Image (tube, rainbow, N blue to C red):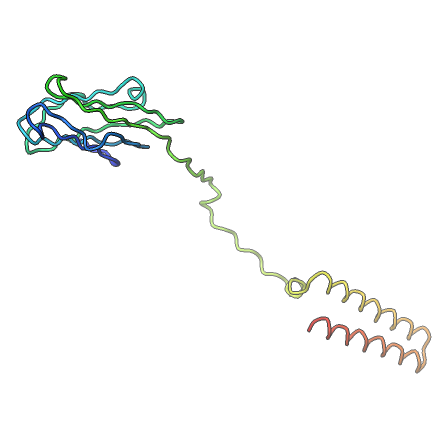
Length: 191
């Protein structure tokens, strides 16, 4: 007995008397292969499965004729092709040489779009290089703060050059005033 994963349709054979047949559902939507379970409740019976034209293009039955004996179940595998758009049709299951039949509306829906995986996913990630000490310091400071630091460095440099060129005690005191002012500004800025 061949079985396929997925949905199943149960069809009761000879449940209400000889040559009677009834499906447990009147419709089914599938994306993959499914099965028909023929449950015999009375005497033995010949069961015929038939697909309408629309369904026959995308669905294949392993066999179309089955002999069902009570109390056994007979499994009918139904193979479904992949489709781009939904296909709806009818599956007819009959007994008594076609005298009685039940019909199930079957819709074959497209499978959800798969995820494409390329080779780069199989390679381990390369570790990021360790940041340099300067990069660690700069990463913790925003661009406005870096601008103020640069201006403070320019002010101290200018004061130092001026004190060196002019010379004397007053020039040195001017340099110290600029250096203390930049230091106070840095403390306030980085706080």
